[in-house]
Image (cartoon, rainbow, N blue to C red; front, side, top):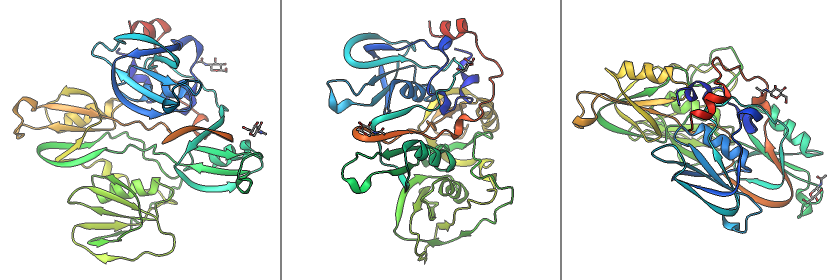
Length: 388
Ligand SMILES: *[C@@H]1O[C@H](CO)[C@@H](O)[C@H](O)[C@H]1NC(C)=O
Ligand SMILES: *[C@@H]1O[C@H](CO)[C@@H](O)[C@H](O)[C@H]1NC(C)=O
């Protein structure tokens, strides 16, 4: 398994289809048995495998195809693992495709893949009318926020929505699932996490309003370690017009109101504006947070001498996005010295996928332009034997 960590950081959405030689192939009409880690929606088995590859704990998956008789489970992508890393067994089931994670493989692209009569439901942030789905896909590719799209074609009913192109957003920046206060812990980020949100080289003038809340207009509630972290999340979301961050419980409230911004004084809350046309100051990534746990999303733990060593380990591991370290002052004696490495899926993933006539869905092609060559590509034998 030693090779898999090196390659993962280089996969992009282009890896929707992988090179033949590395592909362990798919098992048709088979369910692989194991512990379920997570269930997500996915348009096909290849994308499901990509999600599995990016989910650090996932070793294999089972995907329910739209031709399955089990309609309620259409497009379900089940990410799985087991103590040995191998499937614990298999059962046959019509309409299910299964396979292994490609963590050890280099991937290749199948760029123009689109999904006919498939709706990537939800996550809309902008709509426009386009002559065909190809133009809709180009609109998506050219919009920095767009990760995938759904186009309603010329036979769609009701007719008033024909030729409508829905641009959709999903998070591609790491989000900590939960942050809480916990004595004796130290949490922080990998110094290499990708937070390049804008092309501009002009430094932003960060606009924060201390002890100010902007009530209502909630778009999405997340967790953030600092107001600056919340600002970066707001900047990444195309619908975020401003945000309020409560330091007491680390909640980052992204807000949407294009018309007005009504502020009120409130202690412990910092509000602010996104910065999309300048270079954001990412120094919040360098901060470590004592007495704080970035809870969950663990994929691995190692022993470390101190919090700095834990941060170095996280930074050196391309899988790692953030970490929590248990210091010697933690009341949890048996956990002292443990460095928990963490990550979340940042591959574009529609919140829901379903069948719908006269629509076409697909992904932005912008991540396909360049994918750096893997510095140490495992051979096919290494890739295969790492799973056996
Ligand atoms: C990727 O695909 C291209 C075109 O199909 C092919 O020429 C190339 O050899 C492939 N690369 C790998 C690593 O398989
Ligand atoms: C529009 O959708 C219908 C129903 O899914 C399909 O039969 C037709 O071929 C589509 N038209 C185009 C141009 O793709």
